[in-house]
Length: 387
Image (cartoon, rainbow, N blue to C red; front, side, top):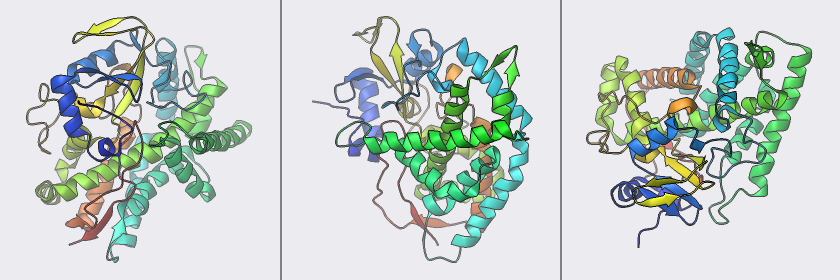
């Protein structure tokens, strides 16, 4: 009997055969282990993302939600409050130009490559992707650099789920609380001494008389830290993995760096780090012969929708010339990730820099250890060497 268990190490390592069975045979599947319905076809996921009145995010959007987070972030609110929050956050971002990050990103990528080029092998996660994303995040938020290791370690721990107990354990909750305490102290300092930085702009942003509450500012800040460190670093790592496993695509980028932006989009489709997010039903829904009831949780398997042959031709082929419009790598609908511009910019610059300095590389370990998470997917370590 087929079983899809999002807590399974086998799903962490390779979810795509499971996804295909779900799409073909169980397009509306109830997972006993996660106590949630799984939607795996592109059309069903996209429709759910558009129908926020039925598929609400207000109960949390992580498969295993962190305490006191739901209702305080963009990803865990619905319109009209979601739209008000998004307008305020976008206003703050507009005050802190994203274009100004290009130079710091390039400098960070160059410094990272300087440090790894002479090594026999290196861990892309700790020595490149995490380093660059922390540099981007700390520059964007103007954070003090002395705590960056603690910030990184707690962010990575907070998004994990124990694969044995199948829940957030006290250490995961404590990591999330540490990030809140850390952000709260910085926000209080910015309140006393505001400057031309994103956190100061968050607290001052006002659109049509609406401002972010203190709780929304705090949780938005923590979410940016989590997304900036784990989600973006995880995606960069998956991109490096894709290019390692597909040397012909890597050679195309080396020969023509202008293709990098298209390759980023194909990687978001082919192997996104953001695999599964959750919604809660506000009414009964019948789909594919199954009755999902109001109050039930529903998992939107973005990683499966991105491999749905009903939407993308030859979906298991990594084709950097594909231009996969409408992929779910950054979500869809009102909850499309607000950091898409930064994510695309940082990833493009990093890989243009890396492939110029290291045009050929390979994996050292064939077997990878994957982060235990019901929402995100990326290797805990990716050891590479130049060839």
